[in-house]
Amino acid sequence: MPSQRFMRLPQEKQTVIWEAAVHEFADQPYDKVSINQIIKQAGISRGSFYTYFEDKRDLLLFILWGTKQQWTQFCVKSLEESGGDFFGIVTRFMEEAIVFCRHNNLFSLHKNLIAYPEPLLEFLPNPADCEQELNEVLLSKLDRSRFVDPSDEGVVLVARIAAMILFTTLSEFCKRPEREELLKENFRKSLYILAHGAYHASYSGKMEDKES
Image 1: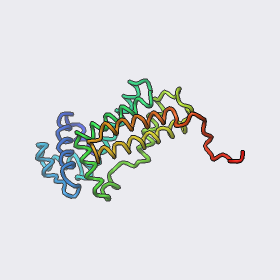
Image 2: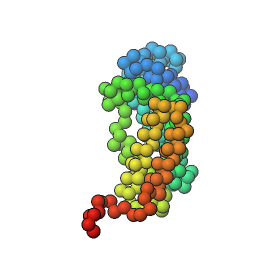
Image 3: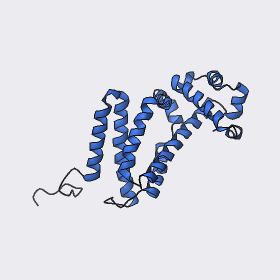
Image 4: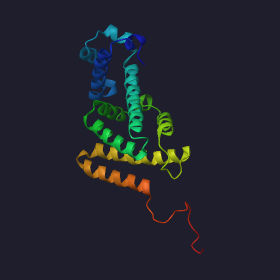
């Protein structure tokens, strides 16, 4: 993570270094990322770089941590603006994520990491930690009044199913971006089924005895 000296830099200068680093990590596989290119684009000296970060691994950890923080802040803000509407925030998250995938160098950066399994395991945030942090946000700010089971366990279960629908849709979009409208429509239908159920009759959750 960055040194205190980096954190004392003006926000404008931090942003220049951030953008130069993201551009390089998005453009090159991790093992070919050049600190020389980063400092050239950022307009800083090599000596200054090493007073801010230990190495390129430290810089990448900072970028990924910052990205996670941005998405968490987005979730908090969206929940507050929507009055805690769960399906509203999931839909908004999908729209923002597609924009992110289409235009943001950070998406190319993540694709580069995924192409190299060892860096992926080392650098990407722990999924369990991410889920716990997101659940804490949801459970503290979500309007649970419309949930059939408003308990922590019930809300987390619905959130996990919604997350699977969301990330499956995003994965398909990354492979076939020209199918965006169809994918969005299927996403909306899937959320509708999750919100309202697939059956008119109640489902007991177990196989009934055919002779009863």
